[in-house]
Structures are given as structure tokens and as C-alpha cells.
Length: 61
Image 1 (tube, rainbow, N blue to C red):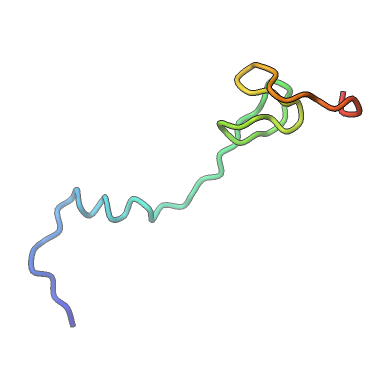
Image 2: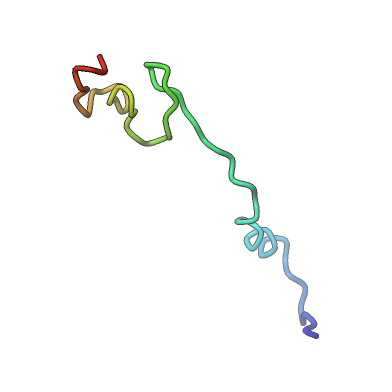
């Protein structure tokens, strides 16, 4: 069985555990009220950062 030679420092221990957290689902709400992923275009209205980026289809308006 392996035995550690030196104690892991607090910093190294926390760096190793940095990926062990449970990922929290991140959701932001667009100005139209639809839930959207952060840093992406809103799928329902086509806006990003308050600007119209993608054209909206006529049937969605």
C-alpha cells in the first residue's frame, strides 16, 4: 500500500478538489423573460447583450 512521503499543503489539497464540486445549473433570464444560458443568444427572441443579433422568424412574432 502506498504511503505519502510529505503532507499535502492546504493549497495543493484545494487545487486537487477544485473539480469535485457539484455543478450548479446556471440560468439567466432574457429581457423577453425566456430562460437562457449565460453568454449565448436568446433562442426565443434572438437578442444578445441587449442587441438584436439573429433575425426572428415571422411566425414567432
